[in-house]
Length: 345
Length: 192
Image (tube, rainbow over all chains, first blue to last red; front, side, top):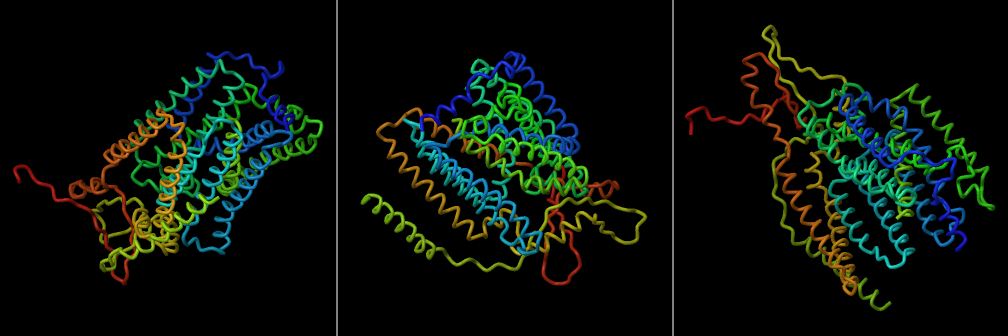
């Protein structure tokens, strides 16, 4: 058991010489702030166009990077975390399946869509309770920590969810991109603590940029969602649920957060050597361990690359349909972030 | 074990008491049948000095949304109305609120021995901030829809367009379409 725990710790050591970054903290801060400002400017200027392009380019690759990162965080032997991972993977699988089934049943004319808010509320409740269970299980693994408070918080969230399920789901859409920033924070804390202070100062720019977007766009007219694709993008950002707020503001804000999300997974974490050299399967503990699965992991990553290419092909052939399918299936990566983030706390 | 059993029984008894509480709710007042809002969209009103008939232009996209909304209008009403009238969701929300408060109490009692005053102060501070934020957010809520329609009479006289939000309602019967504009009476200069 101890051996298994030690294997996991090894992942957090300083990156090897080959993957060590030569960027200093100031350059890192400049890149972060510069990227955030450019993202905000693009999201404000051409929200619909940039949204289409960014999803096309980065949706698939960021999922691949995320999957690879999670594989790196996965211990070779679960040891005393076996139950935690069992609950985590079961939850990811079942919740994703349920999330995909809801629209699938509707489009297959098996379900009329009646009581849609209740179905959404039920799904959200299961997700909250699942995360609550994971937090409690993680809390038990940590000495001197009482995480019992998560229960009242989880139930309070469930109550809010039942009052306004659609708004709660919309809140998840907006909060999810920010989780990537939390991952970056936790990773810097362990691998580059000298950068952490700088990074957290950089985060202070985020509310300023959001306030700037709000100030700039709050009085602008809503975007013309006169075709199916534009309509889907504005609906995804909550234009239907918040009719008194300009859809330009909603789409820009969501796009800005999404671009930060993509930036963290595709640029920031690889930049600080979080995932190791991406082509080196041996840098993944579950592959490099003597009783690991290097071939399986290698095949998994190659299949991931094929899926990314297939996604690009799908976007080229039928962007709207592929976008719908992607955002339904991508719920898996949203859910997967919860257990792996908890492992880092 | 005994304590858990007693606690469980107490929780069950409290939940069961909800039935009696529910029985005390007064009978709802009967109200005339109202139209059900099925879609929120935008509307532009303009005049045509050369036209002979009033025309209603609906884009294909809006018509499609309208058809979908009409097809799915089983539980119609605006979001607020749906929350107000959805007994399932109200019951579920109430149950989870009850559980939240109950478990918060248990946590508070559990942590009494090693109570961290800073943590409690932080919780109260967060609660106060949320309360204040709620007040501020409500105070800063966007202007009501009728504001956009206030310039309609003058715009019609000037031949200009006026755009604003519109709720599309389904009403029983086969009457003509009716457009209800929320115009408020404005006091002229010198009027009291």
